[in-house]
Image (spheres, rainbow over the protein chains, first blue to last red):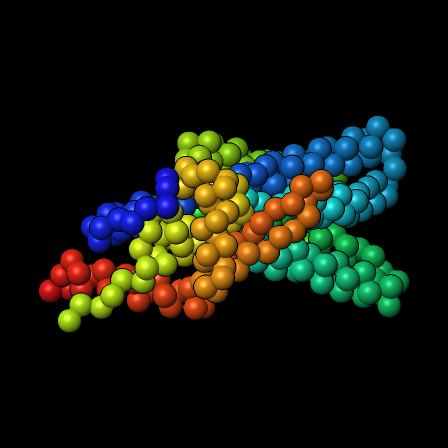
Length: 206
Length: 96
């Protein structure tokens, strides 16, 4: 393309062509975020389960704190990465995940503070179902924004698993170690699979 | 009487850049060069003209060892683009 004058009809065609070429642009790497988080969470769920089964360590659930280490790592990793383009879609998706991330922090802080006040830490069991529900909502909204029905609907499996755990806790049914595997499975279905779907979509469109 | 088309926008490369920036929040120099299939020198000159007219803002940031230029539309640029499209419609009798 050069710096040359064009007629009115060519102008409209050019505007239409340029807007069309960027309209469907999804930031490359959006699917990868889902893959990193999905597989890391699943791997950690399996590790927590195996550590308990092999060593019998009753507090193996503390290993879930490694999620925060991964969070810090991903935050630094993302800050170093600059994007060639930021569409309005990407911006909205980023805002959605900012809200979801903030909800995690607030939830964990409230549960921890109440645990410290009452010296009763079983409420930390709530983190697992609430995480599944929060992440499920985040992925589903992302799917709606990028207009992919699989990404929008698959998270309902994870949300369902989260609600099952939440109801069980409300009914005083004690959580079992196998919940970790169920939680890991929910992240494969509601994060890893949507991640692969988004990556495939990006490759097709870019 | 037909309105005069904004000479700053009535040019192939500048109009392409503005059209892209109207449909995204921000874009860097490399992305704009690829999308418009232009040379770095030519694009740089046209971006300078658009920046001087305050139609776009260009921010230079350090990314590792490289310098990147991030471009965004300004309110003045948006208004100018809207007026340009309205004028084009008049020329082409789109609304009639």
